[in-house]
Image (cartoon, rainbow, N blue to C red; front, side, top):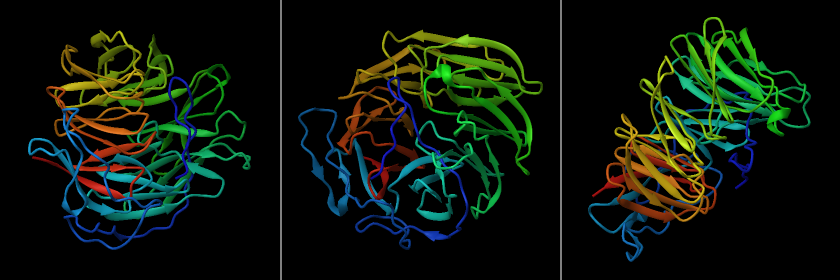
Length: 412
């Protein structure tokens, strides 16, 4: 599989794209031995289909392969991954209740959790889709699918943002950034009040950047306003009420959205790890994890981790979770910031924790997938997949970018 380099405290993400359209409908093929609704064939870029070895919370448990190709932790109280449908192998993200895959750098596929394909859109020559499990330029809601792109070296324009019909994938409009070498990527896309807000920047060092945050009309793509920055990378954008939160590598800028007046700048230690908004709170990662009220931006709580936090925040029902360069998984109470538990995996944690249905899922840089109980930190599942893999969980289905199979998550 072709891979892009990843952004971390040590390296920069280089993934993006543009979009033309080929719309398709139908379903993805059901994997042999799995349960679910049969679907017709639409495979991914790599074959796989079998989960790797799995262990229990005890390091002495032996891997077991369940009938029908499922992977099990070997105990009724633990997790089993059961193949559900195929055609899922590629960069993957979740938005608006659906999975979004990038089966190549130039195609975007939208798939429902049951494996039904909604559409597939073909990207324009010279542009690469900005879609990953994290740090991606994808946003979807009832008004449309909005995806950013990176311009290849051979084109003389900047990055693009495409607006697609949410059901057919048909292109509605395209916004193109200037071809000045400073705005080759469009990332950090969000939508609020009929406005698509996104950031454009380039590669290189932070002091070489001149990023722009733009607001364009959701219907026409016409620019409404812009905010020019003098330096630094922009990693995330959140809009709530009349506040716009722009996260840069080591800072957070808060604007009045209606006027774009800069209200406050704060120094942070998040690096390239993105913040996460959930309900009325913005959770900011870093060596100090912070919870800010939305839309006011007041600090609800903060906690010093004492470690080199290396991921964005995973938000659950009761806890928030981050990973570190030395392999620690740290959990804090969502409402108070009180320490819940910590555990450790083998290898750097760069992928943000994914929290769903009371389970915290962790990917290590060396290639292991682990699952912990959100409340207690008990290890429920572990298997080896591939170094640097990415994954997401939606409606009880786990997808990763290595295997051609979507897995139903079952607990004994």
